[in-house]
Image (cartoon, rainbow, N blue to C red; front, side, top):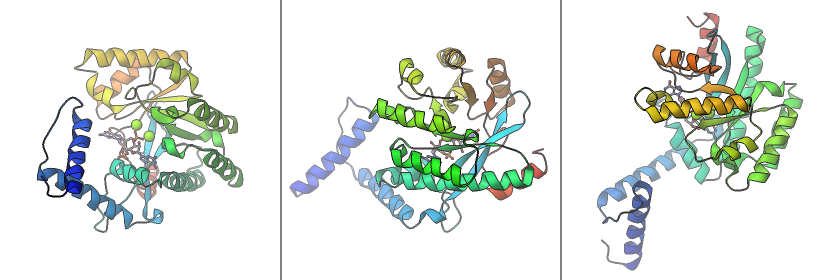
Length: 294
Ligand code: C2E
Ligand code: MG
Ligand code: MG
């Protein structure tokens, strides 16, 4: 599949990475389609590179009280629209920024925007909503903690109303250091949520080590609890763990009444999902809040 050594090694490498990603115990031969998918990745990365952080928007998705159906707060989710106003896939954008080492900058930008929105919403609706924001494992650092601490002080914000969402891999590199940084955030007043819970590989002892106040159950379980008994059992186990660790439960991805009824019976405190509303711009959100979301 090549004439020069370089080409052969490069192409063998491409196939090896693909095989490793899809099925670890296998082999395969090089085909041109590999170059196509590589090319698509390169094109996507070039597209992302055309934008600066000022071009990124932050959408807000309501987090809703399961019992009362009242909006409790919002999660800030980053959105990048291309020149024809089509949104790029957020997860793919995040992956590119992670690869390029730019993710802490984005997370800071999103936090700044969320704090501005918090002020605007408070002023207009006279309500103290809660605000969640996502943080990549590489973002968690001494500098970031200082940045957040300075920001809430300078802007006179109540840190207890800001929820720092982490994913399970947060402490994989150095658990003690991560715990100590998260503890600092807790001491300032921030809440910490474990996002996409149940999808990672954490042991229970690992979960108990982190200074959490919220657990967000991944959408995967909500899609599968009905047909899959194991997933149903797992969801009940997660509920029991959360209860004994005194954590609030948020369930993600609620799309139907049936799902909502199920998590109500489970005793989950809050939910997010298309059933209530999709993530939206601050402008659209204000219109919805004006109308009482009906
Ligand atoms: P996440 O934090 O778990 O966010 C929830 C994702 O589920 C969002 O996707 C949201 O649009 C989607 N979602 C909400 N309700 C429903 C539903 O009912 N059905 C379905 N099918 N999906 C629903 P989104 O916005 O594409 O974000 C994907 C992921 O990208 C996020 O998952 C988060 O891990 C990451 N992300 C987003 N913004 C940021 C950011 O500012 N910084 C970092 N580091 N990561 C971010
Ligand atoms: Mg999240
Ligand atoms: Mg999630």
